[in-house]
Amino acid sequence: MSDFTMQQINHLWNIKLSKAPERQPLIAGLLDKRYIENLQWLDGKKVEILSPKTILRFIDEELIHDNDAILKQSGQFLHSMSSGERKQAFLQYTLSLKPEVLVLDHLLDNLDMAARERITNQLEAQSKNFSIINIYSRDDDHLGFLKDSFLYENGAISKKEKQTQRSNTTKNEHPLPPPLHAVSEHDNPLVAFNQVSVSYLDKCILSNISWVINKGQFWHLYGPNGSGKTTLLTMITGDNPKAYGQDIKLFGKQKGTGETIWEIKQKVGYFTTNMTFQFKRRQTVRDMIISGFFDSVGLYHIASDQQIKLANAWLDFIGLAHLNEKPFIDLSMCHQRMIMIARAMVKHPPLLILDEASVDLDDESAAQMTDLINRIAHEGETTIIYVSHRLEPGLTPTNSFELIPGEEGSTGLMREI
Image 1 (cartoon, one colour):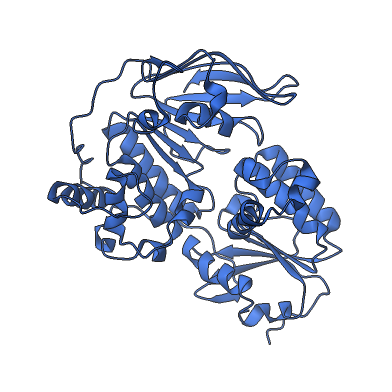
Image 2 (cartoon, one colour):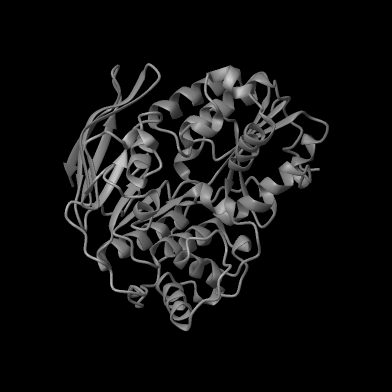
């Protein structure tokens, strides 16, 4: 047994992943209690894991088995919260279970700066009560109060520190693929909110929001957890009934003048990180992209020769043509997300919404994602809304919209960048 595994009563570890794909076998092993050599001290301990997968499992328990533990704790179901709010609520629930070991899988992703500081201080104050393992991919997500830092690489944990290195990406010369059919023109602006307010019960979420989104713009939407970003997006995608009766124009039409939710969704490409967990069948990478033509979770139609040709062109564009016959579920997280963005873009929607596209990725993978998003923005005509708490280095939005919380709900501030 290594000399650093049994030295202290409470293990306080940072474990940096060498690359984001290393996360899958490590977390799977922890969930299934298949501990690698230097984590065998976990055996027999009460281990609680906070990860995207454990959060989704709990949401299933809420929806299928009426588990109301978090509702009783916070007054709200987990599935009705934003990604950042979910993580904070699930952390408090996990702590209430009194673990002997708390495993944090990319805890600080999805969290605004105030939440990161508050949670870090709470964990530091309680760290004498249990062991903590913080698994992370971005250098900024290292927890400074944890005593020991390790690297997870090729299935093993070592004390060796490794400096993050970003590889020089080879310029992709393949052009943005054309649409399958001519893209219909839409009136400018694509989206116009005029003094829009949204309340739930007695709580005001959005207050007098005015936001105009024009063709070809590249927006960065940001604000702290709970500021109403998700609510605002659902007003655009047609999923929120609160949009009716408001002064909102979507793609040239006043909201509530006869358009259907499906007509709106035909004009919006949407990606959020939770979408990748919905695809569990062993569809090939190419079939996943083709399914974007049919808006289906998986491919259940016979693709035309032109659809196959365009799917191949998208694989060339994102640099993943060599993976075309691989099962989607076997890909790295970064490659899955690149495929999902291509899937959202195959019909060249007027508007593309990317919700936390770089969350949980390592620095190199995030740079790869940034390059892809910039290319779509610069080479195409699709308007982009990029939602995040941090603006990735190198990302080049043209405008920003900030949600600023207040006692009467969040107000909005538009800026040109």
